[in-house]
Length: 359
Length: 120
Image (cartoon, rainbow over all chains, first blue to last red; front, side):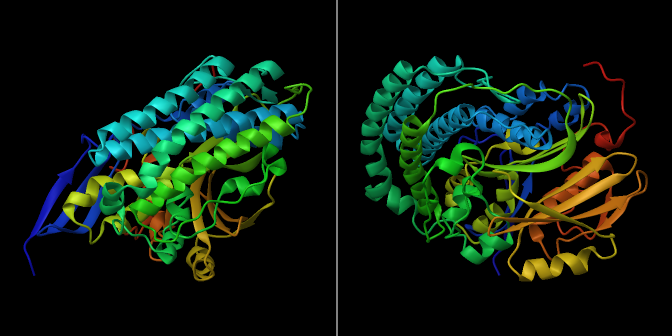
């Protein structure tokens, strides 16, 4: 048996936008075991529900993450709306789906850029983020924000989009999709990308289920799991099928995200064609009293919000389980047996968001 | 559309025997969550084919103990460390026990303290 060496990886590392530390146990160049260490940026956001009224907690929920902030808001208010038995206007539900899918596109483009950068493909990184800017411009125009949007509220949404604006945005999205096509072909077909990611960090379907993988990480291992299939909100009126790959490697995880961007463009088109006229919010009276586990699909996967109300303006409990928390055990499985040089690419392949994870 | 959610109350002594068949049936561990009221309420939630299913058990506010389910669901290690660091629950047999250092926080069990005056 070769000598064992322990190499610390992170919390500061060029491929890590956020701090996670791994102790990598090596035999020569092979990783035998990876021991994770998080906890550098725990903020205790969940406890704020005891001090902030439930309507204000949506602002806290949005600040859990700077990438998927909007869907954090959607997941939280959905739980509160369930226990308050609120019946939302359909237009509000469609607007939530519209912004949620824009979030998915910009999150996936951000990841694709970072992933390209991690394998030294600088031009691909810059083109991915150039297209992402087009999506952020649409966010800015429709919500006023590029990171934190503040358009989701208990009972509906705060801003509407006029028909003229919506039509113009659809043309902008057509242009963005056209430009994205050139980038996506590189991610799917380029020799360098395939060579770098194929067969690297494989997670079998069985291990993905056993270890609780979610989102693109699970779907890349052949699991047809997507919380949007629960048909929450206006997804009830949207036709789509989860994107699934079989090989379970880094390339499959990238391919799922590449294809999901097209799927999100399609869902937005469906929103544009199906969104009805009408109100964008319903009147909220009383206080939440009850409990619900609200599940929605973030770009990184399933996120769970547990909300428990007690009939006052403060919640007894607000708990968030983010996709990265669920994908950490599968990550350890992917790392076991890999080459040291592949560790950055594998870690990045689950699209880790540590701020989300620690809340 | 809201999904149906089934939650069954159990005791901590039943926990391992209850979760083991779920693992064999291919249920995914979704999360473990603790809520502090006049007692600690711990929820174990699972999913298979979009069917949400949960076990719930009660623990005292002080000196609470739980058996670890990491021998069945390895992925539970993070949640169980969280139960310890945030709520002060002693989880016995966690396969990846960080010994109170999962979250680098100065306070012990900050989510299991007496509630402060509300200012909202």
